[in-house]
Length: 219
Image (cartoon, rainbow, N blue to C red; front, side, top):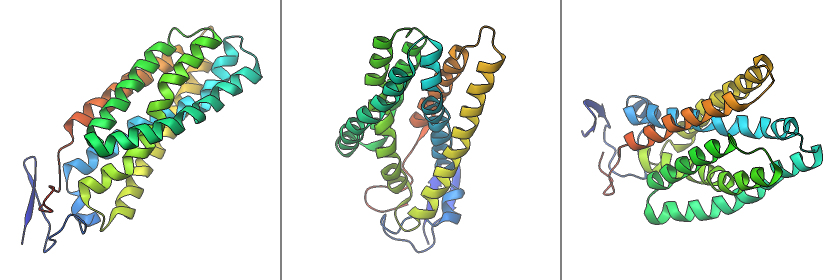
């Protein structure tokens, strides 16, 4: 019977003998890396989902027309397609963890740029930067989970990771709207600064990820 050494913890892996089988949900939740990746996805959607909800009202608050504000949101979708291909391919070549770190670095840069973006062209520059990370995040998270825990219980493990992200997305969206309502004059600047801080936390968590299953299939 094998045991997985996870930091100072040992997780019993029973008679599993291949990375394809991987860890069961019960085994995964006793691994520190499971909670780390849940924290990563919480931080990720805390920022990303709120941006998608509030970028149009933010642009309109800057005096940009509703049509152009909506075009900014549409442009994010277009650039994110490029991000899915480029960062997904990068993950296959350089590793999903490193590609995720790059996406978080791009997100941090984009959020700090958003603090200064007051004109339409500046928002489109934000889109060009941010959209790559936006698409990359969603292309990388599933293979990251499979790489860490195997594919035997990938559906349920990945589902819980997605659920943690949904909680983060809900909190981030509500918080951004609340901050806008209570600031005088109304502004999203503080919310975007908080998002930048949370994205840095997500970046740090990425650096803390360690393999749970090695390339030879051993735990």
